[in-house]
Each structure stands twice: as C-alpha cells, then as structure tokens.
Image (cartoon, rainbow, N blue to C red; front, side, top):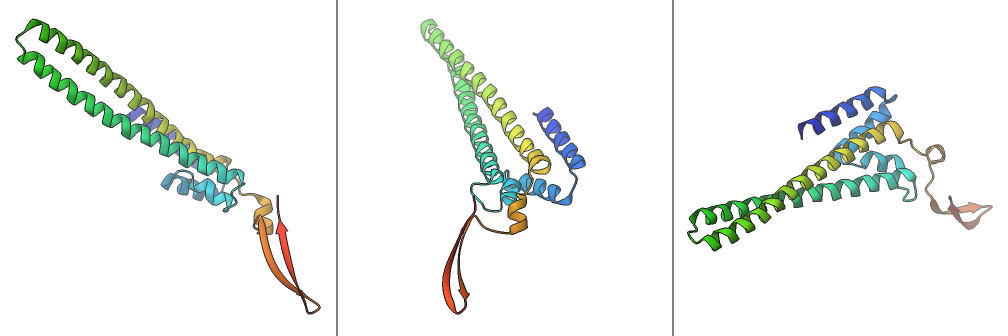
Length: 175
C-alpha cells in the first residue's frame, strides 16, 4: 500500500514540475481536492465538452473504485470474524466428524478472506491510479476550449434585441 502512495506522490510531483502555467496547476489542485473537478472547470459547464465528459468520467471512476475498497474491506472483516469463530469452534469440538466439518468451513472462510484481501488490494491500487492520473490529466492534458474562452459564449443562448425600434428574438446555437 505504501508503495502505491509513494508512486502516486512522485507522479503528481513530476506533473507539477512539468506543467507550464499557474492555470494548469490550479486545475490540478481542483482535481486533487475533488477528482474530476479540474476537468469540469475547464469544460466551463458545457455538457458536450470533452473536458466535462472527462471530469465526469474521473468522478464516476473514482467513486466506483472507492466503493469497491469500502465493500471489500467490509467483506474481508466479515470473513476474518467468521474464520476466528470457526477456529474457536474447532478447538472446542470433541467429536471427530464435527471437527472435520468445522475445519472445512474454516478453510472456505479463510479462502474467502484471502480473496477479499486480494480484491481490496486491487481496488486500492485502482483508486490510487484513477486519483493520480486525474491530477496529471488536469495539469498536463486538459486545455480550456479556446473557442469558448475567446467568444465567451454558451452553446445555446436566447436573447432579445431592438433594431430600429423593432424588437426581435435572437437564438444562437453553437455546435
């Protein structure tokens, strides 16, 4: 676990050193606080923007991986308790057949514990990977849409204008 944290910190530190502008670092800080937030802010609320979709993807991926960590930690704890209870029952049992049956149940519970432990490690690694890549992506690969920045327009706008005293309705759509 500590190796994953060290690698994640090193990658993020390298991305901070490589990123060229303060805006890139600001996006990285936003993404470090809430995964995907840097990409969302670069997308400027346009739901069809590549940055917005990436941000939503990072948020969803992080939440799914974190859910896997929490559920597998609970399963691992449950199997550990079951293994301890069965181990105590095996020690107290005096009948050979009952002891044999309890040992088999103990082995199954222990295998389930080991499987949950491995799955927990995988989900923890995936969570760190999504979190780290989210920050690196925000600093190095996320660029604000220049057309939206220069025009400062929304994808769809509705306006009312007056020309020669005649009111008119104006609808702008940008694709």
